[in-house]
Length: 191
Image (cartoon, rainbow, N blue to C red; front, side, top):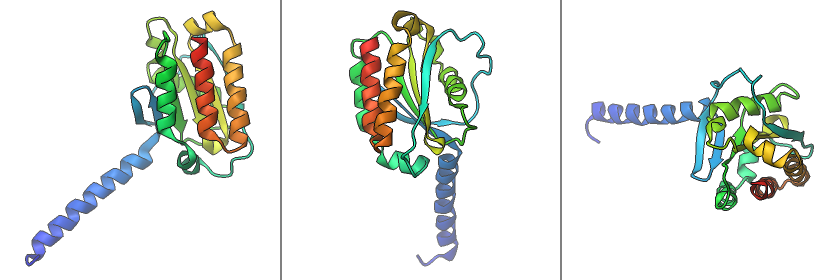
């Protein structure tokens, strides 16, 4: 380019776009997977009024994973998860979502944070109150399954315990995708 002013304008524009992308990437609280695909979610929000929650769920932790959020996502195949959700929801009356959070939670705060995210996503507003959230926090090696009251009344606690056991066993072997996919399959059968 012969015009230095134009060159500077182009460099500034490219830098602004780059900074915007970086800002939103680091501001994001994690990644959501649902039957419609993958999307980011932001920090905060949700209701702190969880006293009226009548659903159920289970939580767990794993020990073998050395990396954090980025390493987890690097080894996690979101396309397989979206396909598993679609298959599980084909004949189900409820919805399943998987959220991978980049937050550094306090020890044993996973279920409270999962419930907060469940509400933030509006999953408690389904027609039959039959939504299920699989919430994973790789930075603290913990996960939770939150089930709304409709599906909890129908199935009891066994499917959520089974799903968390399957996830823990697979996660300890480093199979994050397989662990979540098997949990989704178990949850789909509960519907």
